[in-house]
Amino acid sequence: MNKIVKHLGVFSRQSSESDWVSTSIAWVVKDTLVLLGQQLINNGITIDSNFQKEPLKIHGNNNMLESVFQNLMINSKDSFALVPGKTNKHIKISATKVPEGIKVVYEDNAAGITPEVQARMFEPFFTTKDPGKGTGLGMSVLLGIVKDHGGTITCNSEVGFGTVFTMIFPELSQEEVEAIPKKVNVCKAMSTLDSRTKVLVVDDDPDILELMETALGTCCSVTSHVDPIQAVEDIKEKAFDVIMTDLRMPNMDGVYITTVAQRFQPQTPVLVITGNDKADQDLQQCLDLGATGILHKPFSNIVNLFDYVQNVLKGKSS
Image 1 (cartoon, rainbow, N blue to C red):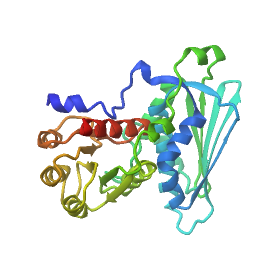
Image 2: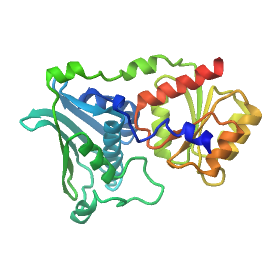
Image 3: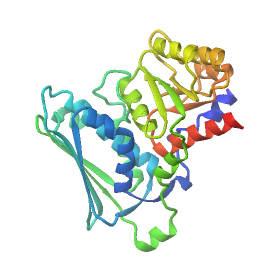
Image 4: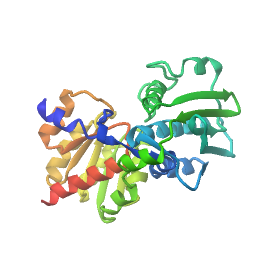
């Protein structure tokens, strides 16, 4: 099991003090949209962001903050799906300075949330989704992230009209901004990958698949399959630089994908995608078969994703 423990930190939800930097909600939202923007557009959803010209700075963990907005955006997309035929679908995000700090308003005009769900939405383990559905964090964890940043969050929703989340975070003074490390630029991480890099992604969750394809597609050539059988055929017939496979899928699992990859493309790194934080026998088997590492859902930071793929490719060429 030591081999699994070594790999579990790639997308861990835990963080160290060095992960906390001087950042802004505008930057966080921009990086989140690199991952989810195209997915929202494909679903007919427009995103309107309104931020001051000079970014309002907070002391934050970008991994955690991006998870907050990923969760809200995915929830909005799912909520719009409950209103068949709706054409004017929009999400609005703004950040303004108020006496209490930085006020962030996230608003959609989707299906809205019933009073019964609003009353329980921040409870641990409460969800309205079917088991295995969705890619985001639970609302109780979202609340915890906001509180970890010294902030507050409230929800105001009306069924049939949409939902508004209001968050308030403490603002950093200029002296604090200068004393705290700055945020890593996602574009710099993206530029280190070659557009000729061929990546295969296999996941039975269409949301995860589209997210990965959209994110990695900005700098790599991505082939994606929701059906692992089609992925196996591609592994047998085409050459890839990186193979990324979900661990749990119907009819075929990540262990089998790893086995096929090791037989037909033994030099190609295999990354196993899982929503399980704990070590288990299937993960161990993948690593024993030759899998290079583990990626954890939800994908909470795009810079980490690019950096990890880059590091895997460096290891392949060394």
